[in-house]
Length: 223
Ligand code: CMP
Image 1 (cartoon, rainbow, N blue to C red):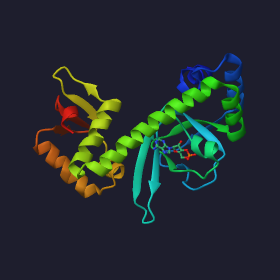
Image 2 (image 1 turned 180 degrees about the vertical axis):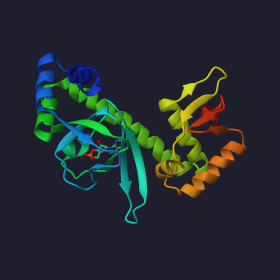
Image 3 (image 1 turned 90 degrees about the vertical axis):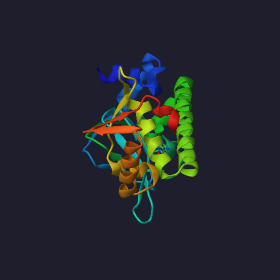
Image 4 (image 1 turned 90 degrees about the horizontal axis):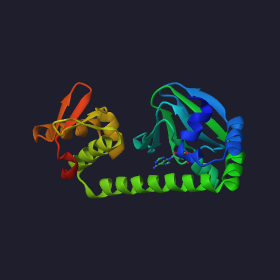
């Protein structure tokens, strides 16, 4: 797929006319980051938007004691860095490459000009922001209303919704995240997550095999 075809397939740019798309393409810069490299830090001033061509990044915030909370994982076709451009505030989170990444970056002035010129792009942007707010609300309710056992189950449920595959026997299989990754998503410790995963397994809700987790058919309804 060419860069042009890729941009057309990305919701943020898919409503752009041919001329606007060409203009955006001329203005973007290709950038590569290695796994675990920090793309930018929370509280820094920000002057560009990034679009993921290949790879995945983690959106995280860190407490004063260095404790990490993962807000989201973004992948191919997703963008980040728009908030500092829109509200002129510092970066709201740190972005770290989860794997080797290839990104396109667009400078603040070019991004705001494109938004002003193209109502379709503004609509797409608002849709994505609404969907992120919805997910963030879900995350707040998980943290506020569930105990740690429920929170671990919710994370697995979310993974199943995002990238799970349903098998013929009704179970859903998902890639197994590390216990540390789960802990970062729910503000807990690795040891606690290990205990909760063992309890979920002993209660017959999940089965872990190698790098995969199998969820019983009615898992989605349980938590
Ligand atoms: P910005 O504040 O410029 O830099 C950090 C970026 O992380 C932010 O823009 C968004 O693109 C992204 N981001 C912040 N919070 C979330 C969230 N809850 N879900 C997904 N992405 C987010």
